[in-house]
Image 1 (cartoon, rainbow, N blue to C red):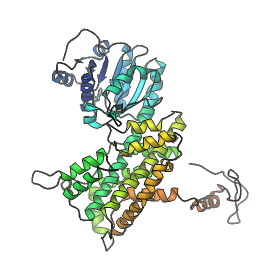
Image 2: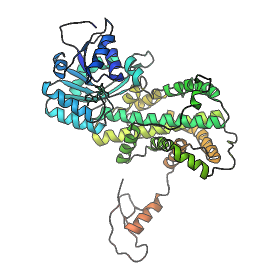
Image 3: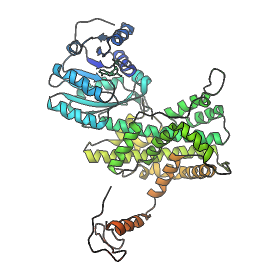
Image 4: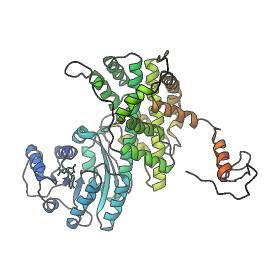
Length: 486
Ligand code: 2AM
């Protein structure tokens, strides 16, 4: 640690692993950083580990921390999401001045960020809620950073945040960090990223199940996933899945075979689905991914169910091939991202965020958990047409999904026949078939609603917006109760 009497470029509060790694990343990029942590011993240990060319300055009180910063102050918070963020902001506020910039880099719920942004704006403090994705390793070497909030603070923190972010693009020089939009939009985009991550993981977990049922050992699956990682499915999650399949325990048993199949979750998948539902958007693949984790956690109940409840007599997968499963993964991912970007577009319109969907896809190309080759294709699709109604309408994706859907269909059929649960694949296929059905079955839903609740319906032979009611049972009057929309 170099000692200096000048003030530090920025400060960071919260020295858990993410915070520590972000500080080291900032310091390696030439920024002097003051740090503060509730538990001072952690600060002392951390500062002692910094090398001579890393300018990291420990402070023991909030007052000392704030005094150590150049003005306008740039303060990054990486404390536990929730009440702790409010508490730390309350501690900071009496010591801050107009135009200081507070950046919450934790996993805050976007509505909390929106509230804090508004409350701090009233005090003249600029607030940025920034999603940071990439885990511990990303924080150290370059995460994907999704900042949103006070737009006039962006030029003042842009260089710093882009310097520490991952880089992507053909020359690996395009920062995976750009301005997202106002209010809570940065944390919103990070939340959707995490939701999509749940979906991607479930899609691969189902591939693992199908490939196992086809008789592949973990070592063989390592080779298969590694092969997938050389082509259109190239992504961080496929890469680590290949490594996981290859890993063995001390006695040589594949690691994957010794790990309990009960998945944890911290809540961002659930938040994503709730938000999509509130917007009236069917982000169903992610909903299935969240649900599958929930079912997985009922370990003892599942053991009992395994004794009582019957599967099919035949557990064969017919002529299902590894290539079909690869197509299933790809098609399911396309549909999941189409659903995710529908939500982003709708949330942007609803909140007047002006989200740039191509830019968001570009930001996700590096550093974050869902980084993947095909985010380039998504960025290009929205680059071709920023107002694309649906990702699946872009010429590249029309061809891509039409070519891979047969494999998804075959995988879902084979899995259903064999009693293998593939909720994400089944949901993707069902969405696809519903989405491409010009005339579906909601005419019956409308008739039922009109029958029992006089909710009225529109007719095929009349213009949209004209509502009709039928006295179905011959007992009601002409009174209607209006048609509800989601
Ligand atoms: P700690 O080291 O003192 O626990 C992630 O948990 C980070 O949030 C840690 O740096 C932790 O500090 C901090 N944190 C958790 N609860 C806090 C609180 N009530 N006030 C301040 N910091 C807190």
